[in-house]
Image 1 (cartoon, rainbow, N blue to C red):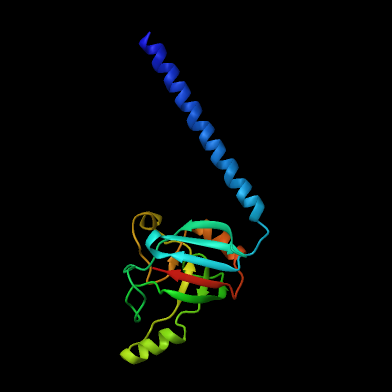
Image 2 (image 1 turned 180 degrees about the vertical axis):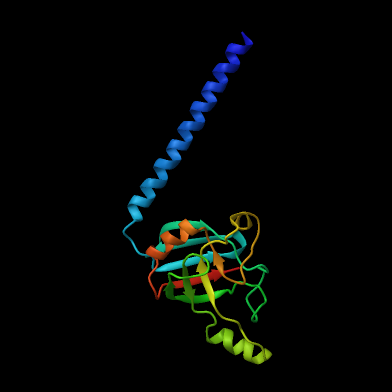
Length: 174
């Protein structure tokens, strides 16, 4: 009697798990279908949550889990500090030949960043991008690893690369 009950419980658990997976995949494909032809006109990054969302006219297109600079807390101050900047920036260009699969340039440093660095007599740094992952994909799962950039998986940067035109505003929050 106990083995029959266990089998029924296992069968029902497997069926429930499969059904929840199917519902998840169906919901994801419908979100993608609704938004697949829209280009983003705003990117919002929440560093503390390790999330980046693409929007079209304030409507969410998609959210990605991200990795940041190896020293992620606080606003980028100077070249080599390993911090990801915070503030308002723009996508400057698409780079199909990035060392990290593909990348989108971010307009860091802006005029405020340059002025602040000049006061400190330091270089503000440059070359901040949204880009694909490292060659060692395990690194991407467990820690922030970039020099200050925002990293996603390669398949995600392929999607972002298509959805985000040059000139798109980027808001990066702590």
